[in-house]
Image (cartoon, rainbow, N blue to C red; front, side, top):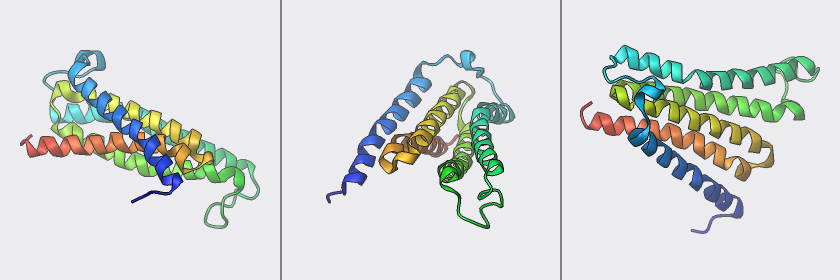
Length: 180
């Protein structure tokens, strides 16, 4: 099956994000020093969940920043101030609103995946979570920067965000399959 040009561009720009995610996750698992990132050998489930929530603080800060941008634009725009229930966003608000909406959706999935993963990782393996959070954030930045230029331009960021979340879910499923 031959894909249209835009879909080929999306696939080509997504592939490196998937490879980066796999490499970063494997490197974190095998090479990062757990004490360097605050992970300890004997972490109870509550400690691992607390660690995961703390590691996800930058994810929530990203989302808050997106919300702040949209709120600021709405406040300064007569056309947008009434809210999205009353009119489509102005041209100036459309991209930030779309980035906010997508970031909210991605945040729910990513944080959920990170919390599930935290319940099955062993203490020293928790180093994976800050790496997944970093991948998520880099993905969000590239997604936001490319959004106005079209699907191909935002593909790397979207794929990096998605791949890091899928990796978290996949690792959690694999570890649960191993009886953890």
